[in-house]
Each structure stands twice: as structure tokens, then as C-alpha cells.
Image (cartoon, rainbow, N blue to C red; front, side, top):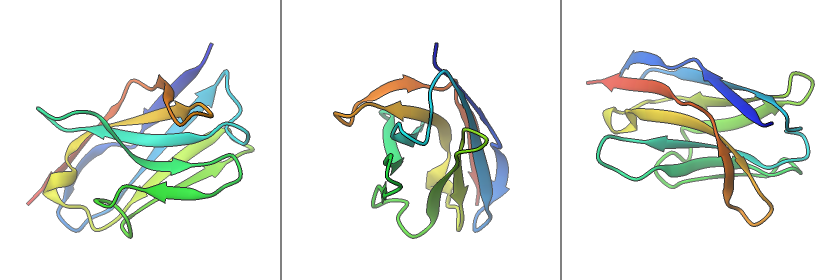
Length: 117
């Protein structure tokens, strides 16, 4: 049974930083593609960062250059470092396990990130 547990969300001022963590169980993140998605009120959930099993990363244009996805294979944990945060980054952020076709197979429960102006 796959479980993804996020932590690290909170309230931050515009321009600030946050680091999200995703502790995974029932899945080995070193061989399974992982990602981070977000859902703002009234909007669809979108994947904003992805790390392939080989370590290659990809980002949505909206976060490129500001967000960094990494993983600690020993701790089976995925991270999302978010810098230069903007009010439009306010959303619930979800950890995601991604299948080989690029589809999300599992979502975590989410953690709220609020950026004040």
C-alpha cells in the first residue's frame, strides 16, 4: 500500500521560501518517478515538478527557476524547495507517485501553502 505523507507547508511572505517534504512508504522513490502537484481554489490540480527514476527533473513554466525537486533515497523522501514565492503560488501542495506513462498513480493528502503579499 502506497502512502505519501507531506509536511512543511505554512504561511510565508512574498519572496520567502519553504521546503516541503514527502515521506513515502510502499514505494521505492529511487526507482519510481515522483512529483509535486498543487491545487489552488477553483483551479484544477496540476503537476509542477517531476523527478524521473534517473534523476532528471522537469518543472512547469510557472515555477521554473524558483522551485527545485530533490530526493533522499536513503530516507525514501522527496523534497520541494520553493524560493521567491509569490501570492499565486498559494495552493494545497500534493506529493505524487507517477507511473511510467507519466500519469499520477497516487497522491498524498496535501499540505497548505499560503503566500501573503
